[in-house]
Picture (cartoon, rainbow, N blue to C red):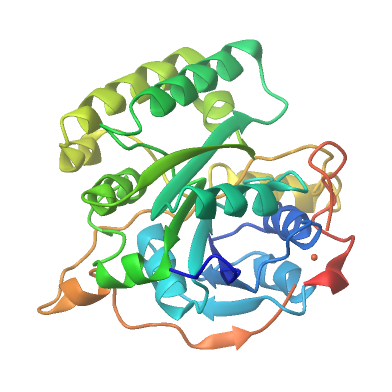
Amino acid sequence: MPGADNVSKLSIIIPTLNEERHVGDLLSDVASQTRMPDEVIVVDAGSVDDTAAVVRRFPLVRLLEGESPVACGRNLGGRSASGDVLIFLDADTRLPARFLESFLTEFERRRLDIACPLYVPYRSTLTIKGFHALFNLLTRAFQRTLPSGAGHCVAVRRDVFRESRGFDPGLKFDDIELIRRLSKGRRFGIVEEQVFVSDRRYRDQGTPRMILRYALMALIFAFGKFAWANRIEYEFGDHGHGRRRDDSQAAGGAGRRADGDLERHRSRERPAVRQPGSESRGFCPEQGRARFPRGGDPDPERRGDGGSRGRDRL
């Protein structure tokens, strides 16, 4: 752990798959931070859209070739990072301008090893906002006894992450399992800083259905039965991506960067094949050839242009 007079190096890791509509906004948010990260790594799982082209606009972002499931991308990014503190972000997450500065200050002040922020749905309904408020209340209340969070944003010290097997690709919900596992015998905490998250699952599948599904998952996670959650219908990736591309092409590409649209296309989960000896690298195949480096700017209250502003800052 860095001394009191030292500032921790910070690495951001973002796994992507067909995230052209969202990764630019997130990278722009990162570029506009009052505390800039020391490193930004995007791990792409073979996108067929313009994700790579969007990332190219941010010259300091390092882009690696990965593959699904998302746990493999997170592991590759985490093991390739050089920072003292690693922050894993989903590509449809949005950050207030002071997030990294305020979050890291509190993370260091409390000498945490792993931490999560508060998750707030962006431009959503009162019902969905209320459900997230309840989730945040529960994670605060049980942070000492039942550490919880979500893959939208997870921070962990690099040495803690590298000493572990990382995210488990054999689980649909590798994020909460990693939080619970790495928190054992270490300092976990909820940092009272907000990140903005997408509500697209509620819009795609219906609010009542998703609330019931998340309530069931919370019960499963409370008992630590993470493999049971693999049976729950919960798709990762695309989420109408093909349909939106067809519509976009038919309309001459109009609306591809609609203002305020935070819907995202996450990597589709594939069953992980565990090879002999793979435990040491998180059950993922060896990967990580750099495709190109570098990366961006804005404010979640005003953006939605695919990250075209401030691209020179990253």
